Amino acid sequence: MTENIPENIMKTMFFPFSHISKSQLTSVSAFFQNLGLLPLVPDFTADPMRADLTEKKFLNPLFSSVQELGGVEKQVQSYLDWAKLHRGNEKNLKSLLKEEPYFMDATGLSRIQFQIRGGVKQVGSDQKKEVQNPLLLLKFAQLLDVQNEGIDDELAALETSKISLFSELMGETSEKNSENKSEKSDRGQSDSSYMDPGRIMTKERVVSWFRYAAEKSIFKQPGSTLLVTTSPAVLDYMVSRCEGVINALDIDSIKVHENDCEKKNNWLQDFSRFLKETIAENNVSGSAQPEADDICFLSGRIKLCLFPEGGMKAFLNIPDQSIAVCLVQLKS
Image 1: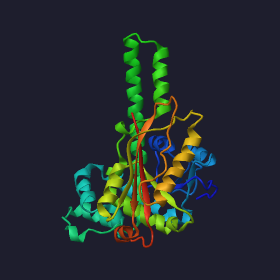
Image 2 (image 1 turned 120 degrees about the vertical axis):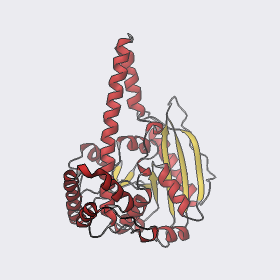
Image 3 (image 1 turned 180 degrees about the horizontal axis):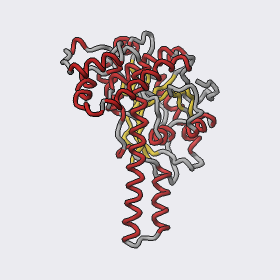
Image 4 (image 1 turned 180 degrees about the vertical axis):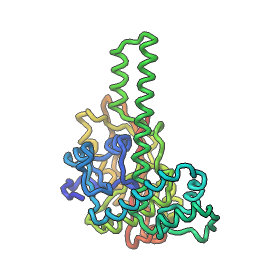
Protein backbone atom coordinates (compact mmCIF):
# COMPACT_ATOMS: atom_id res chain seq x y z
CA MET A 1 0.00 0.00 0.00
CA THR A 2 1.28 3.47 -0.75
CA GLU A 3 2.59 5.36 2.27
CA ASN A 4 2.23 8.95 0.99
CA ILE A 5 -0.81 9.69 3.13
CA PRO A 6 -0.67 12.88 5.25
CA GLU A 7 -0.16 12.21 8.95
CA ASN A 8 -3.45 13.85 9.91
CA ILE A 9 -5.34 11.49 7.58
CA MET A 10 -6.09 8.06 8.97
CA LYS A 11 -5.12 5.08 6.86
CA THR A 12 -8.13 3.00 5.96
CA MET A 13 -8.59 -0.49 4.55
CA PHE A 14 -11.77 -1.63 2.80
CA PHE A 15 -12.96 -5.07 3.90
CA PRO A 16 -13.92 -7.89 3.62
CA PHE A 17 -14.44 -7.31 -0.11
CA SER A 18 -11.85 -7.48 -2.87
CA HIS A 19 -14.16 -5.85 -5.40
CA ILE A 20 -15.40 -2.36 -4.57
CA SER A 21 -18.50 -1.41 -6.53
CA LYS A 22 -19.40 2.06 -7.77
CA SER A 23 -22.07 2.28 -5.06
CA GLN A 24 -19.55 1.34 -2.35
CA LEU A 25 -17.06 3.87 -3.72
CA THR A 26 -19.71 6.58 -3.53
CA SER A 27 -20.47 5.74 0.11
CA VAL A 28 -16.87 5.48 1.30
CA SER A 29 -15.63 8.59 -0.54
CA ALA A 30 -18.27 10.64 1.29
CA PHE A 31 -16.40 9.93 4.57
CA PHE A 32 -12.74 9.25 3.71
CA GLN A 33 -9.97 10.71 1.57
CA ASN A 34 -8.12 7.46 1.02
CA LEU A 35 -8.98 3.79 0.96
CA GLY A 36 -6.72 0.75 1.10
CA LEU A 37 -7.82 -2.29 -0.88
CA LEU A 38 -6.85 -5.93 -1.47
CA PRO A 39 -8.03 -6.20 -5.10
CA LEU A 40 -6.68 -9.72 -5.87
CA VAL A 41 -5.14 -8.57 -9.15
CA PRO A 42 -1.51 -7.78 -10.07
CA ASP A 43 -2.47 -4.28 -11.33
CA PHE A 44 -5.36 -2.17 -12.62
CA THR A 45 -4.33 -2.27 -16.28
CA ALA A 46 -7.70 -3.74 -17.26
CA ASP A 47 -9.66 -1.45 -14.92
CA PRO A 48 -9.36 2.21 -16.05
CA MET A 49 -11.78 3.61 -13.46
CA ARG A 50 -9.98 2.13 -10.46
CA ALA A 51 -6.60 2.87 -12.05
CA ASP A 52 -7.63 6.53 -12.22
CA LEU A 53 -8.70 6.51 -8.57
CA THR A 54 -5.31 5.01 -7.70
CA GLU A 55 -3.53 7.73 -9.68
CA LYS A 56 -5.54 10.33 -7.77
CA LYS A 57 -4.40 8.72 -4.46
CA PHE A 58 -7.89 7.82 -3.31
CA LEU A 59 -7.39 4.08 -3.76
CA ASN A 60 -4.25 2.58 -2.23
CA PRO A 61 -4.26 -1.00 -3.53
CA LEU A 62 -2.03 -3.73 -2.16
CA PHE A 63 -1.80 -5.89 -5.24
CA SER A 64 -1.37 -9.66 -5.30
CA SER A 65 1.59 -11.12 -7.14
CA VAL A 66 1.25 -13.14 -10.33
CA GLN A 67 2.68 -16.10 -8.42
CA GLU A 68 0.00 -15.83 -5.72
CA LEU A 69 -2.81 -15.62 -8.25
CA GLY A 70 -1.63 -18.20 -10.79
CA GLY A 71 -2.94 -21.37 -9.17
CA VAL A 72 -6.09 -19.70 -7.85
CA GLU A 73 -7.03 -18.28 -11.24
CA LYS A 74 -6.67 -21.75 -12.79
CA GLN A 75 -8.86 -23.31 -10.09
CA VAL A 76 -11.56 -20.69 -10.57
CA GLN A 77 -11.54 -21.09 -14.35
CA SER A 78 -11.62 -24.89 -14.03
CA TYR A 79 -14.69 -24.69 -11.84
CA LEU A 80 -16.44 -22.24 -14.18
CA ASP A 81 -15.72 -24.47 -17.17
CA TRP A 82 -16.99 -27.50 -15.30
CA ALA A 83 -20.13 -25.66 -14.12
CA LYS A 84 -21.06 -24.84 -17.71
CA LEU A 85 -21.11 -28.55 -18.49
CA HIS A 86 -23.41 -29.37 -15.57
CA ARG A 87 -26.05 -26.68 -15.81
CA GLY A 88 -28.74 -29.35 -15.96
CA ASN A 89 -27.85 -30.54 -12.47
CA GLU A 90 -28.49 -27.33 -10.52
CA LYS A 91 -30.43 -29.04 -7.74
CA ASN A 92 -27.56 -31.30 -6.70
CA LEU A 93 -25.07 -28.50 -7.16
CA LYS A 94 -27.07 -26.13 -4.96
CA SER A 95 -27.34 -28.76 -2.24
CA LEU A 96 -23.63 -29.52 -2.45
CA LEU A 97 -22.52 -25.92 -2.13
CA LYS A 98 -24.89 -25.37 0.78
CA GLU A 99 -23.61 -28.34 2.75
CA GLU A 100 -19.95 -28.31 1.81
CA PRO A 101 -18.76 -25.30 -0.23
CA TYR A 102 -16.24 -26.14 -2.97
CA PHE A 103 -13.73 -23.59 -1.74
CA MET A 104 -13.49 -25.30 1.62
CA ASP A 105 -12.29 -28.60 0.21
CA ALA A 106 -8.58 -29.14 -0.26
CA THR A 107 -9.11 -31.87 -2.87
CA GLY A 108 -10.76 -29.36 -5.21
CA LEU A 109 -12.59 -30.03 -8.45
CA SER A 110 -12.31 -33.82 -8.57
CA ARG A 111 -14.19 -34.15 -5.28
CA ILE A 112 -16.95 -31.83 -6.52
CA GLN A 113 -17.41 -33.94 -9.63
CA PHE A 114 -17.42 -37.15 -7.60
CA GLN A 115 -20.03 -35.84 -5.14
CA ILE A 116 -22.32 -34.52 -7.87
CA ARG A 117 -22.25 -37.84 -9.71
CA GLY A 118 -22.68 -39.88 -6.54
CA GLY A 119 -25.25 -37.67 -4.84
CA VAL A 120 -24.86 -35.21 -2.00
CA LYS A 121 -24.44 -36.64 1.49
CA GLN A 122 -25.35 -34.80 4.65
CA VAL A 123 -22.38 -33.43 6.57
CA GLY A 124 -22.61 -32.98 10.33
CA SER A 125 -21.83 -29.57 11.80
CA ASP A 126 -18.84 -31.04 13.65
CA GLN A 127 -17.39 -32.15 10.32
CA LYS A 128 -17.56 -28.75 8.62
CA LYS A 129 -14.21 -27.79 7.17
CA GLU A 130 -12.58 -24.47 7.87
CA VAL A 131 -11.50 -22.32 4.95
CA GLN A 132 -8.22 -23.83 3.72
CA ASN A 133 -7.40 -21.37 0.98
CA PRO A 134 -8.54 -17.83 1.84
CA LEU A 135 -7.37 -16.44 -1.49
CA LEU A 136 -9.51 -18.94 -3.42
CA LEU A 137 -12.65 -18.10 -1.45
CA LEU A 138 -12.04 -14.37 -1.80
CA LYS A 139 -11.58 -14.81 -5.54
CA PHE A 140 -14.91 -16.60 -5.89
CA ALA A 141 -16.59 -13.95 -3.72
CA GLN A 142 -15.04 -11.25 -5.89
CA LEU A 143 -16.42 -12.89 -9.02
CA LEU A 144 -19.87 -13.05 -7.43
CA ASP A 145 -19.74 -9.37 -6.43
CA VAL A 146 -18.67 -8.28 -9.92
CA GLN A 147 -21.53 -10.24 -11.48
CA ASN A 148 -24.06 -8.86 -9.02
CA GLU A 149 -22.92 -5.29 -9.69
CA GLY A 150 -23.39 -5.90 -13.41
CA ILE A 151 -26.94 -7.10 -12.75
CA ASP A 152 -27.64 -4.05 -10.56
CA ASP A 153 -26.35 -1.75 -13.32
CA GLU A 154 -28.63 -3.40 -15.88
CA LEU A 155 -31.65 -3.09 -13.59
CA ALA A 156 -30.83 0.56 -12.88
CA ALA A 157 -30.56 1.27 -16.60
CA LEU A 158 -33.90 -0.45 -17.16
CA GLU A 159 -35.52 1.61 -14.40
CA THR A 160 -34.11 4.82 -15.89
CA SER A 161 -35.50 3.90 -19.31
CA LYS A 162 -38.89 3.16 -17.77
CA ILE A 163 -38.97 6.51 -15.96
CA SER A 164 -38.00 8.35 -19.15
CA LEU A 165 -40.73 6.58 -21.10
CA PHE A 166 -43.42 7.41 -18.55
CA SER A 167 -42.19 11.01 -18.34
CA GLU A 168 -42.56 11.38 -22.09
CA LEU A 169 -46.01 9.82 -22.06
CA MET A 170 -47.08 12.18 -19.27
CA GLY A 171 -45.70 15.18 -21.15
CA GLU A 172 -42.91 16.12 -18.73
CA THR A 173 -40.13 18.18 -20.29
CA SER A 174 -36.82 16.62 -21.19
CA GLU A 175 -35.11 19.39 -19.22
CA LYS A 176 -36.77 18.32 -15.96
CA ASN A 177 -36.01 14.69 -16.71
CA SER A 178 -32.37 15.57 -17.28
CA GLU A 179 -32.19 17.43 -13.97
CA ASN A 180 -33.57 14.42 -12.09
CA LYS A 181 -31.02 12.10 -13.71
CA SER A 182 -28.18 14.50 -12.89
CA GLU A 183 -29.28 14.77 -9.27
CA LYS A 184 -29.37 10.98 -8.86
CA SER A 185 -25.98 10.64 -10.51
CA ASP A 186 -24.37 13.23 -8.21
CA ARG A 187 -25.68 11.64 -5.04
CA GLY A 188 -25.14 8.04 -6.07
CA GLN A 189 -27.17 4.98 -5.21
CA SER A 190 -28.58 5.10 -1.70
CA ASP A 191 -27.90 2.20 0.65
CA SER A 192 -31.64 1.77 1.15
CA SER A 193 -31.82 0.32 -2.38
CA TYR A 194 -28.50 -1.51 -2.18
CA MET A 195 -28.24 -5.25 -1.60
CA ASP A 196 -25.62 -5.96 1.05
CA PRO A 197 -23.11 -8.42 -0.49
CA GLY A 198 -21.81 -9.14 3.01
CA ARG A 199 -24.99 -11.12 3.72
CA ILE A 200 -23.66 -13.85 1.43
CA MET A 201 -21.01 -16.12 3.03
CA THR A 202 -20.47 -13.60 5.84
CA LYS A 203 -18.34 -15.81 8.07
CA GLU A 204 -16.25 -17.18 5.19
CA ARG A 205 -15.61 -13.70 3.80
CA VAL A 206 -14.52 -12.26 7.15
CA VAL A 207 -12.28 -15.18 8.15
CA SER A 208 -10.70 -15.45 4.69
CA TRP A 209 -10.09 -11.71 4.42
CA PHE A 210 -8.38 -11.51 7.82
CA ARG A 211 -6.24 -14.54 7.02
CA TYR A 212 -5.11 -13.12 3.69
CA ALA A 213 -4.62 -9.63 5.18
CA ALA A 214 -2.37 -11.19 7.82
CA GLU A 215 -0.38 -12.93 5.08
CA LYS A 216 0.04 -9.52 3.41
CA SER A 217 1.25 -8.03 6.75
CA ILE A 218 -1.61 -5.52 6.92
CA PHE A 219 -1.60 -5.61 10.71
CA LYS A 220 2.18 -5.18 10.98
CA GLN A 221 2.34 -1.87 9.13
CA PRO A 222 3.34 1.22 11.14
CA GLY A 223 0.54 3.44 12.35
CA SER A 224 -3.09 2.61 12.94
CA THR A 225 -5.33 1.34 10.18
CA LEU A 226 -9.09 1.69 10.32
CA LEU A 227 -11.06 -1.12 8.70
CA VAL A 228 -13.97 0.29 6.68
CA THR A 229 -17.01 -1.63 5.47
CA THR A 230 -20.34 -0.81 3.86
CA SER A 231 -21.88 -4.06 5.10
CA PRO A 232 -24.08 -4.07 8.22
CA ALA A 233 -24.11 -7.88 8.06
CA VAL A 234 -20.32 -8.02 8.36
CA LEU A 235 -20.16 -5.70 11.36
CA ASP A 236 -23.07 -7.46 13.08
CA TYR A 237 -21.37 -10.83 12.61
CA MET A 238 -18.06 -9.60 14.04
CA VAL A 239 -19.75 -8.00 17.06
CA SER A 240 -21.67 -11.21 17.74
CA ARG A 241 -18.48 -13.31 17.72
CA CYS A 242 -16.13 -11.09 19.72
CA GLU A 243 -16.33 -10.29 23.43
CA GLY A 244 -15.68 -6.87 24.91
CA VAL A 245 -16.53 -4.82 21.82
CA ILE A 246 -16.84 -1.08 22.47
CA ASN A 247 -19.51 0.76 20.50
CA ALA A 248 -17.55 4.01 20.26
CA LEU A 249 -19.73 5.83 17.78
CA ASP A 250 -23.20 5.28 16.36
CA ILE A 251 -24.69 8.17 14.37
CA ASP A 252 -27.86 7.29 12.51
CA SER A 253 -27.89 10.50 10.45
CA ILE A 254 -24.86 12.65 9.75
CA LYS A 255 -24.68 15.34 7.09
CA VAL A 256 -21.83 14.94 4.60
CA HIS A 257 -20.63 16.95 1.62
CA GLU A 258 -21.44 16.16 -1.98
CA ASN A 259 -18.64 15.56 -4.48
CA ASP A 260 -18.59 19.01 -6.02
CA CYS A 261 -18.64 20.85 -2.69
CA GLU A 262 -15.56 23.03 -2.13
CA LYS A 263 -15.74 22.39 1.61
CA LYS A 264 -15.56 18.61 1.30
CA ASN A 265 -11.78 18.10 1.62
CA ASN A 266 -11.48 20.15 4.81
CA TRP A 267 -14.44 18.33 6.33
CA LEU A 268 -12.89 14.95 5.46
CA GLN A 269 -9.65 15.94 7.20
CA ASP A 270 -11.53 17.08 10.30
CA PHE A 271 -13.59 13.89 10.29
CA SER A 272 -10.48 11.71 10.01
CA ARG A 273 -8.93 13.54 12.97
CA PHE A 274 -12.16 13.08 14.92
CA LEU A 275 -12.11 9.31 14.31
CA LYS A 276 -8.42 9.03 15.23
CA GLU A 277 -9.06 10.73 18.56
CA THR A 278 -12.07 8.53 19.23
CA ILE A 279 -10.05 5.37 18.58
CA ALA A 280 -7.06 6.61 20.60
CA GLU A 281 -9.29 7.33 23.59
CA ASN A 282 -10.83 3.86 23.24
CA ASN A 283 -14.23 5.39 23.79
CA VAL A 284 -16.56 8.11 22.56
CA SER A 285 -14.43 11.07 21.49
CA GLY A 286 -14.52 14.17 23.63
CA SER A 287 -13.77 16.36 20.63
CA ALA A 288 -16.55 18.02 18.69
CA GLN A 289 -17.99 16.13 15.77
CA PRO A 290 -17.27 18.06 12.54
CA GLU A 291 -20.36 19.66 11.04
CA ALA A 292 -21.09 19.86 7.31
CA ASP A 293 -22.56 23.36 7.46
CA ASP A 294 -23.61 24.28 3.92
CA ILE A 295 -26.36 23.68 1.37
CA CYS A 296 -25.45 20.02 0.68
CA PHE A 297 -28.33 17.59 1.09
CA LEU A 298 -26.38 14.33 1.35
CA SER A 299 -26.48 12.43 4.64
CA GLY A 300 -25.25 9.09 5.89
CA ARG A 301 -24.85 6.72 8.78
CA ILE A 302 -21.67 5.81 10.61
CA LYS A 303 -20.93 3.23 13.29
CA LEU A 304 -17.51 2.69 14.87
CA CYS A 305 -16.71 -0.42 16.91
CA LEU A 306 -13.48 -1.14 18.77
CA PHE A 307 -12.48 -4.80 19.07
CA PRO A 308 -10.07 -5.54 21.96
CA GLU A 309 -6.88 -7.58 21.65
CA GLY A 310 -8.21 -10.55 23.62
CA GLY A 311 -11.38 -10.76 21.62
CA MET A 312 -9.55 -10.60 18.29
CA LYS A 313 -7.17 -13.36 19.34
CA ALA A 314 -10.02 -15.67 20.32
CA PHE A 315 -12.11 -14.80 17.26
CA LEU A 316 -9.58 -14.53 14.42
CA ASN A 317 -6.30 -15.64 16.00
CA ILE A 318 -4.80 -12.16 15.67
CA PRO A 319 -2.68 -11.76 18.83
CA ASP A 320 -1.65 -8.42 20.35
CA GLN A 321 -3.81 -6.45 17.95
CA SER A 322 -6.90 -4.40 18.65
CA ILE A 323 -9.04 -3.59 15.62
CA ALA A 324 -11.20 -0.57 14.82
CA VAL A 325 -14.03 -1.21 12.34
CA CYS A 326 -16.16 1.52 10.82
CA LEU A 327 -19.45 0.99 8.99
CA VAL A 328 -20.48 3.78 6.61
CA GLN A 329 -23.64 4.10 4.53
CA LEU A 330 -25.38 6.83 2.57
CA LYS A 331 -29.04 7.57 3.04
CA SER A 332 -31.69 8.66 0.56
